[in-house]
Picture (cartoon, rainbow, N blue to C red):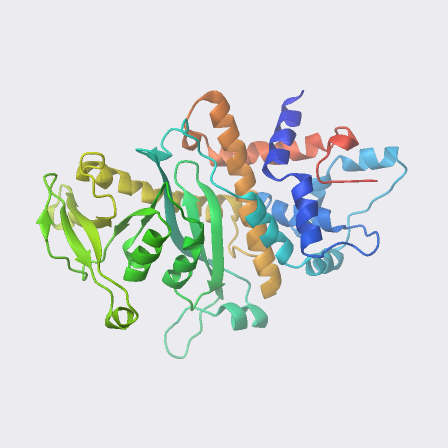
Length: 399
């Protein structure tokens, strides 16, 4: 098999054609008549928008089906690239639920016990964080997503959508995500995103997500946590431990206490990151549910917490490499914005899934591979493998 054929099989493993058809059927997005842009091809187009983010929609479609026309000629068909308005109408017919269904149906943590850097003493390391992305300045987008605040008498240039993600740190796979208007804070959506954490995971978060509810809901899911706390949150050293950490109590607010919420025992770890200039030294304070100082000494957890910053690299993969545009999202209407972002998440899943399989086969950590290098390989290979046998094309049925 050729290298492009191997790549085709890998992409098919990431997003099987059967899963696409199932998502279309589940959301009742089936076509009532034959069209030049059937639903399954539009799904692939929405995903491909992130692979060629700088190209126009018609050029993305051309890149996606380049070479396929030869196969269609063999079976007596003729296909012309639709105009921009036809592509827009096809996306509107598809809606956003198909992409959401496909994402939640397919994406999951992939690391195994052999995946280097993905576990800490048997616990799968996962990270929660969020970011904001510019969307086009249309009346509908501004009304639904909102704009950042600005000086009196001025208005922010672009509306923004907020995206909160749950990431497997050892593979950079985003296995759950929620988007919301800019005015809704990360903490609100992060609490809902805890639906996917479970026993056997170690969840990390930054100080902006610290709250009693965050700790309480994480613990209720059977998941361990390691989170940074803000400077204004104080803890009493109730019981000092041999490794320099100490046990303390996290108290609920008066409102939560009236609802029956109880205090939660936490372990507090304090450490300073050395810097040549004393004024620039940073003091970190972490809380964790991991109370065994022999299995999880404070120094180990302090070092491991900085895996949380891997999520910043993932956001960079999104904003710089996948969506390398001045305005990250190109859709003018809110429903297509949601559709596009889920396609974007599926595009990232496809690249990262391919990297995971390649790294596993080579016996190296997935994070040793280049995301941009893999993306370039995919962009070059997609048109080539369209020249293969028609029955081997997972997404582009011509029957």
